[in-house]
Length: 89
Image 1 (cartoon, helix red, strand yellow):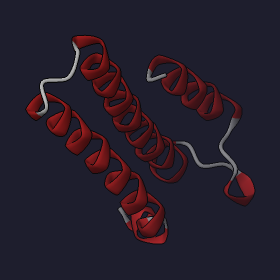
Image 2 (cartoon, rainbow, N blue to C red):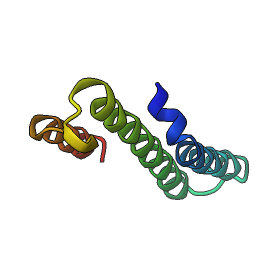
Image 3 (tube, rainbow, N blue to C red):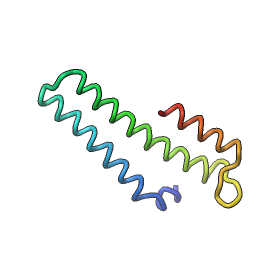
């Protein structure tokens, strides 16, 4: 996963964001906040995790499966990336 080393700081920032959101869920539960607020925080955490997953999958496709010229993915690879991103939204 050499590509993750190049993108290491960006990925770590996303992980820190996810951690902060999960900690917000924990605080909301400890404070016995309303269900709607807890659910909103859970949804935000899930969205952040899905974005992280999409980023790693996209990099994997680009660098290990279907890299094209100049580091740009081929048309089929880009189509797969678009499908994965749409699914994880």
